[in-house]
Image (cartoon, rainbow, N blue to C red; front, top):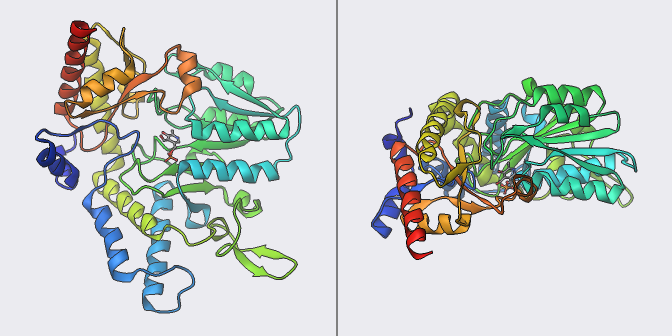
Length: 411
Ligand SMILES: Cc1ncc(COP(=O)(O)O)c(C=O)c1O
């Protein structure tokens, strides 16, 4: 297990919360957004107070400093996922990346009636709606891979991928079920029929090692804020030949090589995808989040959250009103335990235990098609990261038991 006592010292929110609220913060909502260590905030502070200037265009010392910090951040983050800097553009986050892809591929793929786009039913809306809309706009079909238990139904997926399939987009790890999916066979099958493949790694990044080359997908994206980084920054990885071929979703300053009154030509990847002044501080902050995670060892982070999942599943299973929905095998789980409490709405559970300082989320978690498939209006979701320890799991289970007792008494 990681040394959470030591780690928590890097996250001032815990001390501040306790001072302000007179109770410890049991933060179990890192799947929504993680906390930020001081090293990340200090790196951004250093940029803002030390060398703030625009990048790729300022011909003076701090301009050069900002450009080299921004590009060094790109290299660090690209290396973190086994990519090269030229294969990775900064975006506003996962949702921004997915929408950019839908726009660019919509132009590139020349979709028509009879073509099929495929996603899973367990998708976050951000990796679902943009491609559902794309299919609708082009008269193509949007099909979904069902789940079996807490995992994808791989047999159904293999049957669904056919010569008609033009694009397959899937999550590396689920934001409700927590399952780390075995995507490589599906990616290979999709490639064999000539379909493009996209991986939503938003829940996985910073929680498990990722090697884009081993995974083999054509595109992969994630946000920085779920892996200790700042909000408003994310990345879009793409295979070099695809990035070179695509016309950027957004154009304007920073993206172009030459503009005449009649015509504009674009820079090469990745700059052609970064229209306007980029989120320089965000990129620098995210690179420092990567450095923080690398110092801990991402494998150790994964082992740590697996252990928390094991404990939470074991303890919650003893509460008879609780039904666990997420992946119970901790070796296949990225650090999420989703559950329902029989007879109680997930919002009520989350609110009642929130009063105890236990922060979890209740609801559909931007996965309404999954909720419909599970036949529930929503679930409670506890998600774990490097600052969580066994005491947090005990606090979670105790507060859930208390909420059930209170509900029975007053309900
Ligand atoms: C799996 C997954 N994909 C996409 C997103 C969207 O991320 P963002 O809101 O940072 O764009 C989330 C966020 O909850 C997620 O968990």
